[in-house]
Length: 164
Image (tube, rainbow, N blue to C red; front, side):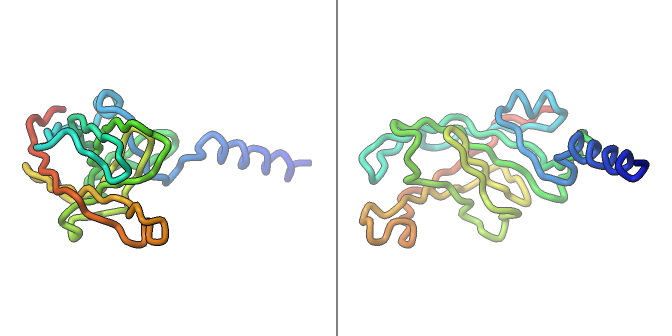
């Protein structure tokens, strides 16, 4: 019975701190600020793109935050793991996956990119006043698709603010 009780406590702790050691990201700039991250904003040199699938993609102001992990449900900010460069977007057909972004400077990439319905997050090791980002699109030829990615644009994001 004692072993069951101890196992229950250990299992309960694992449940309570289920995110221990995992990396996280904020969904919004406001969330990043609330959680204590230094946030910079970046303006793209282009805001509107006509995608190869015939739809339109609109970008918003990008923002950054320091990478973090969780320890006992507390965010541990750590720039040694790089940054999240978050690019909010709106697409006519949100559920279709026909494009992505990547850093033009592959040597500056810390981790793989993250993608959602309204936000793509790149993971640079370092932030610069200008960040070049590639717009990569799925080949409309269904026999090729993502095996033949087409780079259609290079977007330059310029830092406008840095706040704490």
